[in-house]
Amino acid sequence: MENFIDAVKIKVISGKGGNGAISFLREKFLAFGGPDGGDGGNGGNILFVCSRRRYDLLHLRYKKILRAADGQRGKRRKAHGRNGKNSLIEVPPGSILSDVNNINIHEFKADGEEFLFLPGGQGGKGNTHFRSSKNKAPRMAEKGKLGREVFVNIEMKLLAHVAFVGLPNAGKSTLLRKLTASRAKVGNYPFTTLSPNLGMYHVNEEIRLILADIPGIIAGSSLGKGLGLNFLRHIDRSSVVFYIIDSSLPSAFKTFLLLEKEQEEYYKQLGKNNKKPYFVLLSKVDSLQAIKSSLEDQKKAILKPFLQKIPAKHIAFISSHSLQGFSEIYSFLRQAAEIKNKV
Image (cartoon, rainbow, N blue to C red; front, side, top):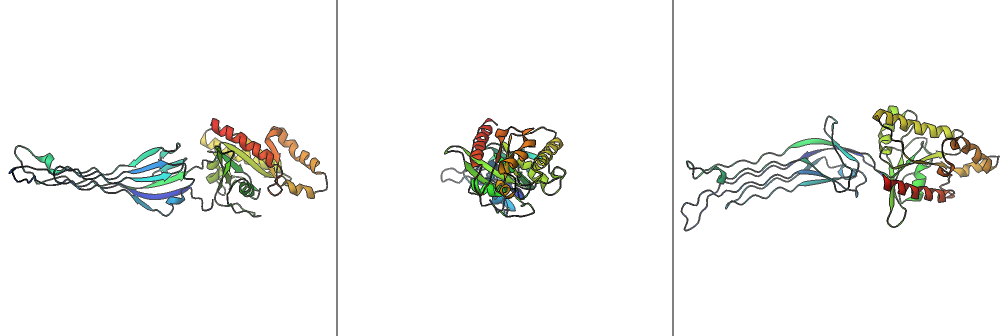
């Protein structure tokens, strides 16, 4: 998914209440019918609703102002003016609303969850409310109350089930393309992309996993270097992590320790321990075949430090070009689906 948007700032305006009506009953055989002005309708509310149909905030990117409808004025015969139509704003799960001071207001978690953000103005009372023994024909009514307008920040933490984590050029985007219908751009770039790529993987007809290629993790990400903090918070919401590490690098295990350390430091800053289940995919195994020693000897040498910390059944050598190791990946994804269902 290109043009992934995970933060927007918009102005929202709730509807103005309708004015109360000034009206008097006029009928042929009723000389003194009295006041019959109806109340004005309430202004429309600004409502946010959580929808799993939304994966990001792209639909709000160019909507700088969203407003609810005004309430209609009251009518004769004590008829109530129509309430203004609410403005319903869809956001994906994991979205957080905050004010101009970046103070969190509400966080969305469940599909269908609604949050009344800004109520509309109340409708004014018609002149029927102002009749008294001293004033039987009041020529006054209330004006509807104004709506409110405020700026709101909407930010989402990506709710992917599986996060692909690795250094730039580790093969994350290529793997995502192979497993899903994602059109993530791939190439031998010495830099990282600026936005996560998403894809949907079908475990079976009923179970689906959202996979996310999380870019931006470099040494010092947890300290705010590069774009690290922006993407570490996306990993925070995933159920399972797939570490994707270039097996041709002489420091494959050190790369794994670096990626793990950056996440641990990030969680320390949040004051929590949020270590997730993970699998390790040692990518680009095809490139090992160009080296003189046997492929199996190279694999054993690469695996040795990993096995001190990770069970062998959680590691696989893979190639997105020859599809080597994809049976293990499919197995890992099935396990990820089981983990997701328990979370």
